[in-house]
Length: 221
Image 1 (cartoon, one colour):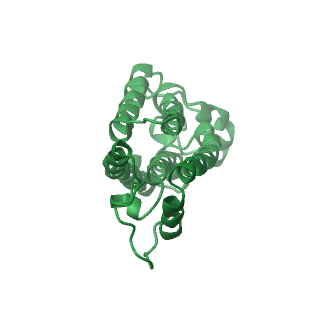
Image 2 (cartoon, one colour):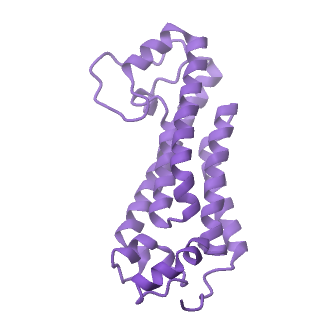
Image 3 (spheres, rainbow, N blue to C red):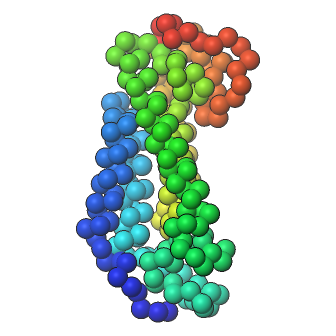
């Protein structure tokens, strides 16, 4: 394999990028409950692992280096651009930042942060008023915050897949689904039939066209 370029060993840049995205997510999410902090903590760990490889040490490229060099000898697999593995594998030889997977990743990351920003004010008002969050995006799905995190993580995975993030991604998705179920148990114990009706009307993660009456924002949470 060729010698690495200057795109790695930039630990300060890795720390700055990880801190930026973690703070950016926190500014939209502002965790309050223990479930919020667990979900946010898992997201933060994923981001740290991602940027540690993106700018620090390319562990995935070193581990797979022999196989990659044998099958794609035309690519300098220790260059920074080669970290965009999907673009390299599918033969995108122009600037990988304009590749299809990279563009799709920006759409998913942007959509995830938009969903977080839309969900948080609704949830915050409902928590302060001691009621269910029924309006806004909560009228279309019960757990938009976890959907948002999964969208962002999926976008990062498309942009810069690594062994650590590939392993942790399904674990995180499962953990978010489990956190959602625990939250629902808390809501059922707190709000009883009101939350049962909400569950019957609104899907957990994937919006669908509503066929029944829309829950009123004035119903007690």
